[in-house]
Amino acid sequence: MNIKKQVPNVITLLNLFSGCIALMFAFNKQFEMAFFFVCLGIFLDFFDGFFARLFKVSSPLGLQLDSLADMITSGAVPGLVMFQMMVSHLSPVVEGYLQWFPYVGFIITLGSCYRLANFNIDTRQTDSFIGLPTPANALFILSLPLVLKFTDSIFVIELLTNQWFLLVITLLSAYMLNAEIPLFSLKIKKFNLKENLLQIVFLICSLLLLMFFQYLGIPLLILFYVLLSIINNKLLKK
Image (cartoon, rainbow, N blue to C red; front, top):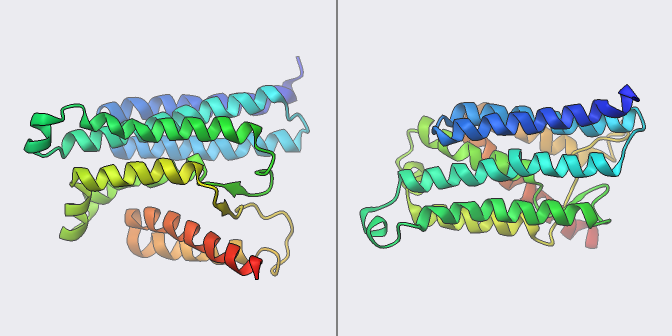
């Protein structure tokens, strides 16, 4: 057995394992631990591709394993977290007539599945993305219960405990995963300031957002990423 060939696959399976653990914590509404293990899975997801390129052992099997692992870590977990948020903050009126309402949170999982399957056959996404990557979307969704837990803002609390607002977030999430919107890649391939200016600006702004807003900075930086990509697309067309 070629050990080098299996290293990326083992890392991918560890990503899947992290996602499974995150699922269990999400079932028990331990959102901080679920967030931690999803972050760990996303970290491993980055390095499986890195080692595949380093060892020159990229394979169709590795590609399929990667998507299957992401389906749990970045697809099933955020869907479950949204379901749990909707269950926790369902109004008595909705609870009486629409008991199935929280299940719409799994639309995020369906949208993630469609994106991952499409990503495997879309040859346009080798150097950049079209639509929001599932790890970015997962971080966005999993940050919401943590924002709710640690914020003192009445406005933010009212938004994140409103089932209709959560429904809008769910539908917007599924749409952004599969939207035909080019988003720039965060990979820095050459150490050239001019060629990587966009990535550098984004990383600096991301650090500032996280520093000043803590958990609230996570959804803000995802929104900033999309907005910056749209502005960059407009400038490239001119």
